[in-house]
Image (tube, rainbow, N blue to C red; front, side, top):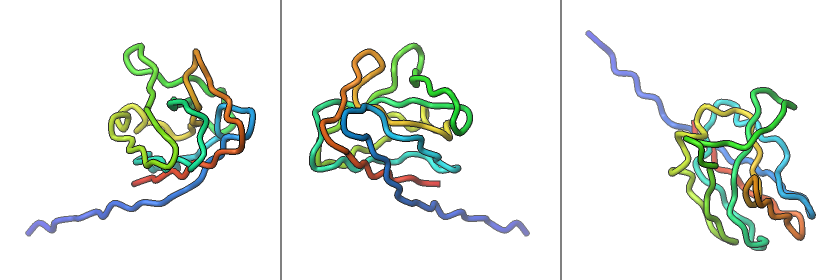
Length: 121
């Protein structure tokens, strides 16, 4: 007799901040989770977001590309941006940063901006 094994997906939230005058968050350790969504702050200097990744904590962060195209998302203040379109691209990554803008056009935020990341296992 075979027993069915059911695994329940677990989720957690963490925060990451882009400091005033900067365009990237601090290092984010996804710790075996995947990015599911980002809750944007109520104040946001208009820009989309892109991602950077490193192979180890404190490593060299590089822009994330898929088939030669930078992985980006359209976001706005006071919204929850679901990361479904980028889920496969981001799935293998553990250490990431989120950038306001793109590699070619980063956008510095005019005040500290705290993003709430919804992660799932």
